[in-house]
Length: 231
Image (cartoon, rainbow, N blue to C red):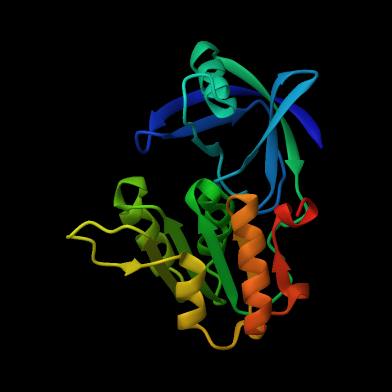
């Protein structure tokens, strides 16, 4: 793990509550798809965020969900807005993509947990992987969705890629799947034991997904989430 200075390249809104941040590191850095970084507020205050970009990209992308004026993530957003340069610690995390495996991949995320799996499928698209890659993204309603067309195009560029966005509360014009995202997965896939499964979202969600998937036959040795260390 290194402490790296980064130039703030841009910050923009993806939705009312989600910000996209692009950082340009002062030197070349190495990380694995699915790892995270610490945003350094001070020596005693370092805040973790998944890296949303592929290791092959020049810029580091973060997708930060910030709810409330003085919330933990909004304080980071304000720091980024106020400064040209920021400091990060990178890389962190043990639930990175196993690039040696050839097993089919199931990538599942809730909300801004999407950052974690985005790094993986963009990397797989970069290297033109022929692995089966099924991506499920669960959200509360269509207003929480962002960059659906871009994501669809990236995953469709994979030889064996499939993208399924799922919302719990649809609008009348929603054309995709409805329900709790992991329940949709269990309806769609009978052979969960065959997959390398990567999960990101709120800790309580990740715990429920793990337990339900194991009950459905998933092999816990092939399930990955940094949250597993805390639940």
